[in-house]
Length: 617
Image (tube, rainbow, N blue to C red; front, top):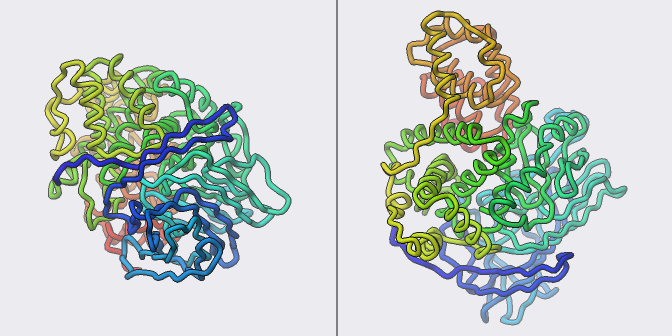
């Protein structure tokens, strides 16, 4: 793909001390992209006023989306819509003609609205349908407390258009206000300024003062409580989880301080986390001010809280400085993994940070091998034309992106690299960036001034992993391998040697089982460490994968795998296990479980497994 440098939507906000006033300076030259029907260079949304009613009985959201718009002498404005019923549309308070384009399986439909060259607002009266992909409606039995239903949204990458008609492109940044009506026994929270207690009437009002990309607009509704960690951090969760979540995430304020010490002020005022039901498809989602998180990170020992550091890091890389298109997704995730690992190093030491990095390095090797027939998918800058952008959300963006930045850091030195990143975030705050913009900034502000030569184009535009890569080592991983080899040689298990292991050491230990490991050895390990019944979801996942790979059936492992797949909806975990079934010619077993589990999965997870197992609904 020919490399080009584009001007992009640059929004610089200057806030006073109470964030009530802002200056908005906008240059509107947007990149053409493959995943939105919007034509923002002609007419673009700037602010959303959302007024909706959440109806659990009918499982629909119904209401009005009103936009303040800018147009360049335009006669229409084009939005994205998918599986939404549009009742009528107004322009400046008066009915105006609209039309829906041909339906595209991935993109939905173009919503074309007639406007005048001086139109200031448009209002879309709409409701969602039972096909809406961003929403997951959960009955009481699918929640932790099992007393009330729950709803959450997941907009990344292009699913916000399935619950709000919108210009669903990451390069379009908007502010928003929302009024949300829910049943009075439930609380609503959004990626905005949030309540800490329930209202009497079930009506909630929200403001997001900083401009964000549409995929970051998020809503959750449930019987939840709030518990503060500090003045600017805290957790939401169901009653049975709130104390566990608070204890697990008690280092949140320390993480924010560590992040600010690295790369500048936190610009979103509040950093809260909501623990969602287990069907949430990701580990976490970095919705501004309110990270959505899976309960699978609650291990009881803070061993999986690097995920919280990751979502916090997105407050700079992703939310503050955003990939302009989904072809540039690595700019969000590679930077965030790098930042996450630096936060973990600052709080817990270099050993812990390197173990996390090495687990990611292992994941990257597996991903590259999985794409051996599609090598172009191992480039950092992708061409996802005619593909779902979800196809690019894998270890290449995360871990190859991280490895590129870590290698670059080692080349130029940490002090210079930190100064560069801090400047990059500050200079590009509240704007979107293409890969080419980043390369220009890198050359101008780091490589050329320091007379440094680096194979940037090979890292970004070529498949695979370049030879000049940072080498990450861990004495603790070497020790885990040694203990495994001693066990396999002597059949003796010394439990005392593993009592202080981190999650990462256990994952490395299990992943290094040799192909020749016997069922007797698997059972001895299982008997010693009770891995089949592990309450740590990451350890359970890698152990279950090995059980499938080696046809191990001891200690009720089959029943526990099935229960895990029915209970957990985190796509990474369940896709790993279904992939293991498929790889080992056990598709029938996988399908038997999937038919029981599918109803518990969000569409993001279900769509992935449908395709993997060739499942026909």
